[in-house]
Length: 475
Ligand code: SAM
Ligand code: SF4
Image (cartoon, rainbow, N blue to C red; front, side, top):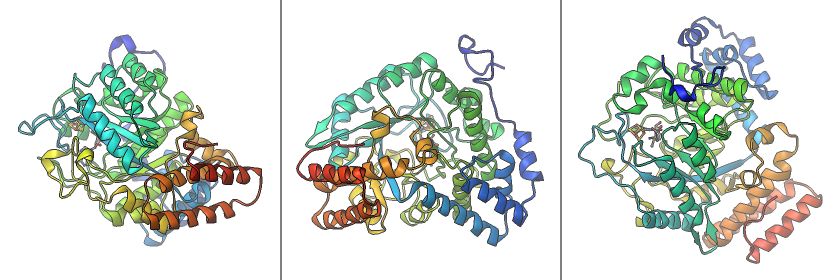
């Protein structure tokens, strides 16, 4: 079987399909989840060990309500102990919705022939970026359909345009990508444009289901998709984001698939993925999928908690697909990044806040319409530290999540101070007066909690410099 063009084949373990469905089902069907076993696995995770497939299956098979509570509690403890209260904020920016694929769950699918397709012009891209900068954003993920027009050169060009926009005190400091996979030279071109993370979701790790829901286009090729981030790694992109679209197949299989993907990266490239995403299917124009595997809210909380424990060092992303009350709840179980002020309409940010969403104008329905400023207010009110930090990426400190997790004191020395500095910038440039007051109270409290040393003195100096008009200060 040809998994990717012959000329890019490398005769070793790299870029080989790594999902064995029988192995996964064997774990799910045969592994027992007794009380002691579940507790041992939770404590292994709290000792900062990435879980094996067998250990993950123990957590998946725990159905006793008391044990499920212990798993959730474990995830909460891990999040608090390891990552603290920081939440990184970003926004998606849709660049173009042309698409030659026919994915049954997506509003951009090629069989939706009557929708007006849009690709932002350079000027429109500048306007969208400016509108996002004016909300206070510093980190974007650019999103594209799969189409010959969205070549590696095109994507690289759009990344450069976004980085070039400056407005008042603001600019975008990190551009991530969610787009179709390329061959190795294509990934290299995109890397050279200065991207942060390249994110590609496998959608489902279950091949028969994959074939059933991908009806046309290049994306139909399961192996091409499965090995896509291997090609990214070969091209030098070691900062990758994986994900599964929950609701296509049994959620337990997808969790095992994600963990298998992680240990494939660890084994072959010696680096885990930067982020894991776990979108649940939302309504979309001509949505046409079976409802058999839709994930209920309580299963969703379980699966997020299990993923947190299974891969304790990786960032976890929760998007505005989920309604505010679910986002607020799930945040405690280990999520590290959320989007704010999201608008999926092509060109929608420059038009102002999205009202009722027209399904023909976005990829799928979002359920959290809060503006970035509303989300900032809520995070600050609950004592989270909203962060727009991009320091590690810009200083070449790659593998930052791993460092946060494994280098003692890294969060205290770098992440928390940098989060507070970017929060102060936000308060100065974009916040209403009362947010500014409560925000600075939180900053003072967090600085006190950091104790007294030279680093904290330096942090206080930098906050004063930001108040005096300097920007982009970090450790
Ligand atoms: N065209 C690129 C691709 O397919 O990789 C970009 C992906 S798409 C613009 C981003 C992600 O949105 C998809 O990978 C899929 O997981 C998710 N998505 C698509 N339809 C969805 C729906 N109805 N509900 C929730 N998420 C959806
Ligand atoms: Fe196209 Fe991606 Fe939507 Fe599939 S998920 S139809 S590839 S935009």
